[in-house]
Length: 91
Image (cartoon, rainbow, N blue to C red):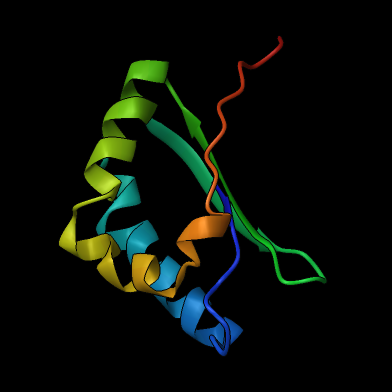
C-alpha cells in the first residue's frame, strides 16, 4: 500500500495511527506473516505486508476499509494518492 497524507498531517500522527493498526488490526488478520511501514524523503508512505496467500491479503484489504481499528489511519490518508499492489514472491 502506497499513500500520501492529507496536507498538514504530522508524521508522528501517522506513525501512531499505523502502530495502532499494526497491533489492533493487522496482526489479527489470518495469514499475515510480516508487515513494515516506511516513509520516503518526499513524504510518500509505503506499507509492505507479506501474506501466506493472495486470498488472505484480499480478505484483509476488504476488512481494512471498514474496520474501526483502521479508521484513524484512513482519516490521515489522501485517498487520491492511495494505491495497493500485489506481488508474487520469487523463490
